[in-house]
Structures are given as C-alpha cells and as structure tokens.
Image (cartoon, rainbow, N blue to C red; front, side):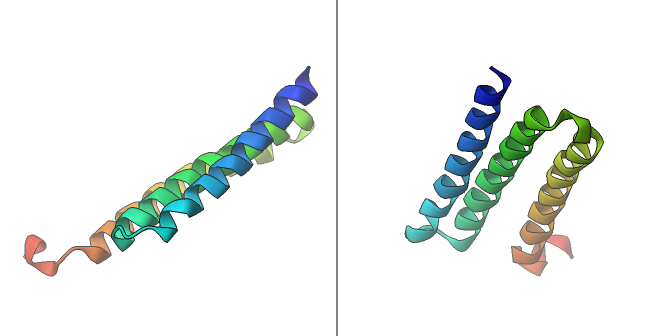
Length: 92
C-alpha cells in the first residue's frame, strides 16, 4: 500500500513537471510563463520528494530539509524576479 501511494506521489510530481512546461509554448508574457513553470516545478518536486519519503523513511531529515529548501528558494526567487522586472519608478 505504501509503495502504491509512493508511486502515485512520484507520478503526480512528474505530471506537474510536464504540466509546467506547456505554458512556455503560449503567447503570454514572460513573467506569466516563468510563474507557471516555477509553481508547477515546485509542486512537482515536492510531490516527488514526498513519494521518496514514503519509500525511504529512514532518510526523513534530509528529505524534509529538501522540501523546506524548495519552498524557501522558490518563494525568494519569485520575489527577486518580480522586483527585477518592475520599473524603477515605483520605488523612488
């Protein structure tokens, strides 16, 4: 049962990875494409790590650290990209 749940989590993560690449083909803005890709990539990676956590529970400290690092890194990267893409007039 645990193996099935683990495989489902990993499968959902892979689906999120591919789902995030489809908006790159569209005619939307670069920031929309980047946001879609980063959200789908983060959710997919976290789902895969949760699947690994179910498969190898002895490595839980490293896998929990990986989930926390993904959440913090992608949130900070989103704020940095938003700041860099804004025109400098709003902050003066």
